Length: 245
Image 1 (tube, rainbow, N blue to C red):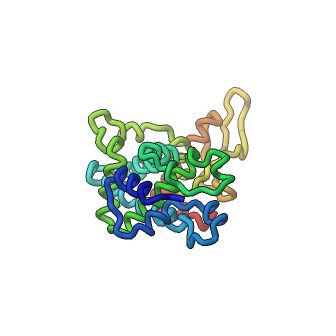
Image 2 (tube, helix red, strand yellow; image 1 turned 180 degrees about the vertical axis):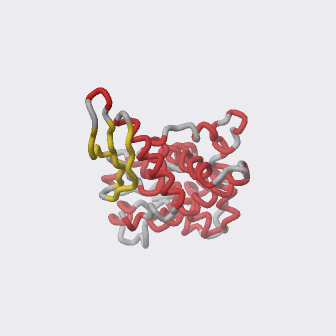
Image 3 (cartoon, helix red, strand yellow; image 1 turned 90 degrees about the vertical axis):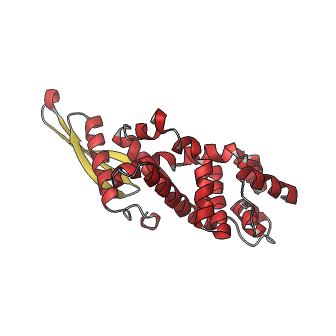
């Protein structure tokens, strides 16, 4: 069980002091711990759900400030290059978040404190707790502090390089960030003689088709399908709602 000194240490790491310590405690409770400890009122899954939106809003706000002339598509791709499980887990590790998570015995034994998914989810729950405790300004300031290495490297063009990623990579980062799912590509048909074939591909998440593409190679057809899928997502931000999948 966490001690008061543990919560103090984590707050020092964050540079934020909670008015409601119960919110901080709840953000650290994994469902495996709550299941094994019936006296714990709730786990952090609802906070994680809220934190995903808080983080998305904060990063979007900060990107618009940095790149006021970028269009929606460019901002969306930049955001997805930052807000994904890999990056969130790295940031969580930088504040030793894994040391503070409350895990069940099985999760503990399986190395849960180092699992990228648990670290990323814990970070989102923590951001939601800050939002509920101190409001949007506090959460935006914390996101700015945590993500400064991404947001302050304009001279090195770190963010701009995200725009140069191939469309399959961009689409995977978007779907991983929103749904924790990976796009799957299917060959629908191929036409023409062996020396001049045209390949027809579709890209889908779960059983839902996002787009179709064609090309003179399977890779080219996949890239076109991914490009079209990204364009559809940018036109309709609700296309990837988790309740649809």
